[in-house]
Length: 92
Image (cartoon, rainbow, N blue to C red; front, side):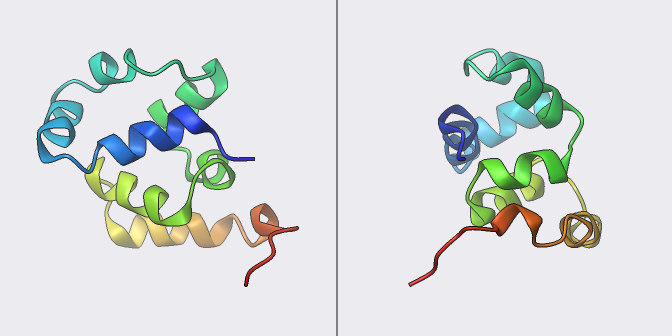
């Protein structure tokens, strides 16, 4: 199930000023979003596996780019999650 507030955070980070602010003071920006404690903890821990089922994959990848995770690291982590988070998804 998608998490609205997590998606909103990731979407808002597409604005360069917000992304810069996030990189400078993550906690301050996170305070604006009523994230569930487990979701916020996953964001703070850069837990790709926990966040992957909660947001659109494009927003997820963009978020980790903004957060400064190297592309190779992100891809390794997302591959380690397997396809288990996409079960039940119908395309088309």
